[in-house]
Image 1 (cartoon, rainbow, N blue to C red):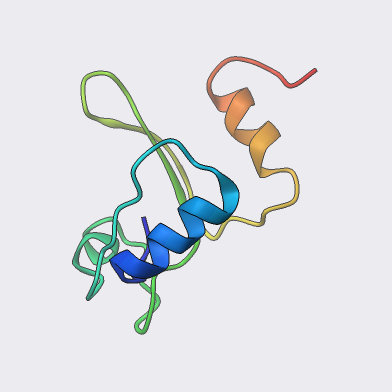
Image 2: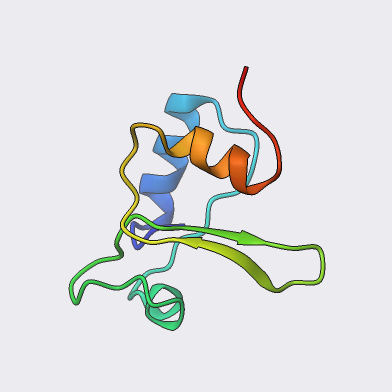
Length: 80
């Protein structure tokens, strides 16, 4: 999810070959609700949501390097 518009998401999705939907939070209402709003745009954050719909982990102000491993560890696994 980001505050970019639908057309921007479509281009990003096509560029990287994603096979899942991307949420366009135009105006940032959802980012504000999750506490991931910097005042002008959303901040890069990751939220893990359990099968019960509750947030299980929050990674605020994500740095790309090492983040995948961090998420895998939170999920109970490890990258090989």
